[in-house]
Length: 118
Image 1 (spheres, one colour):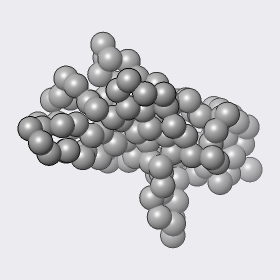
Image 2 (spheres, helix red, strand yellow):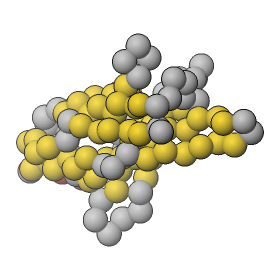
Image 3 (spheres, one colour):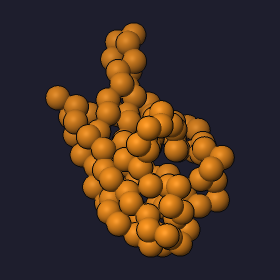
Image 4 (tube, helix red, strand yellow):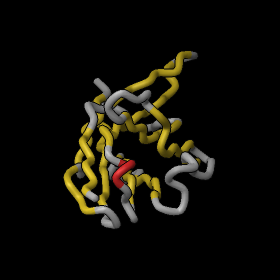
């Protein structure tokens, strides 16, 4: 059973930093992993994504401030968030895609709340 467990969210002052973690279990290889976020009343949007053998991609709004990385040994995805702004406040979701036979399986974490005070 594939499961994603997110952690690291919380309250931070504007300009501060947080590091989100997403631990994946029940899977040994993931084609891509990414972070999405959803603010109240808004659509869920891609924040950052990293695919096997590819460089990370970022939403324009977070470029230069956020860094996505993975630790393959720990099967964990990270999102380092620096210079946080109030508009970054949202629920952040970890996403994993992997190939099973010919199907792409899409897994979501439960989400972790990030709140940024002004």
